[in-house]
Image 1 (cartoon, chains in turn purple, red):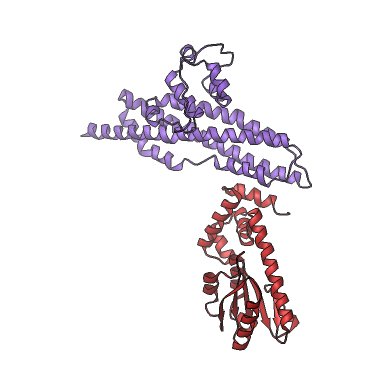
Image 2 (cartoon, rainbow over the protein chains, first blue to last red):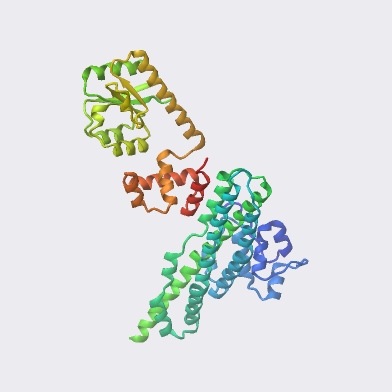
Length: 251
Length: 191
């Protein structure tokens, strides 16, 4: 691990944002508004009833490229993790992606082909928006509720039968197998704008789009990492426990 | 710079020997094989990967035009025909023709022309990391939504070759998804 500088709970929340502006979107996802004064991370989390350890781990993952303490992260409850993932979805679907879309609409390229090029680009991004929407909806409607249900049954040791039935219909392994990569199209779009679109007169808009794509791509990467390395293995463990419970109950 | 690699397909021993000594006089050339028939033409091309293939038209008739076209695109070589001199028998697949009764100077000049075309082309490929003609054909099929198998059938190449081309396209362009490749294909159509 190189250059890991972990953020601690005694640090002021303002210094966190001053240190790395890319952490700003995370505040939104934890429902922390600006105007934080000189409060520390610990103080804010306490006031907002946020699990400070969870907050710190998430912030540190996004802050340090190579930091991903899987074992530590597995301690946190599915509910906490899923809540964070859901908040991220809202941010992608309602803010980041519409903002990029708006910029793409503004973009008019020089040359005779500009209208045609713009149409193609719009269509490409429109497809992408729908893809992300479908992806996140499927997770919110099927995957996340399933994981929360499994966790509850596991903790309360209740509804094992029902749980087992559900597991027969759907298992987290289905999700792990199907979980597709929604960053690929973003990388393609970056390449197309950097290399293949004819030069634009609106360089500032093109640059803004690239900046936003870069940030979204990075965010999605961490997001997928949390899903695949934390959520899936955790649920897998629980599924196995439940299977054992079910068979011992029947015996 | 690498040598330009020649292969000669010609029935007549005299013509083979004559052409060999003529090509050897040109700097930066290399003859990797001379053959008196076009049997196993495809496998020779695959193994030798030549830049220029000189072939008598009589032998050419035993190979289908489709095979020849597919091979020349895939392995990116130029074809020169040796012919009896009927001008109306011109075929676009041959970039030059040698006629019986032609003088040395004319033949040397034709070879030099083809070599310079070739090196121009190669430079372009190197400079821009541009996709080859064959790769472009594959790309257009991908953009149209064809499957690997359909592309293979359409372009007379194996599915394995299609996959290789697709890998190279992705590597050269930095675009992975089908819809991204479609955007690229449309943007570059008229240019």
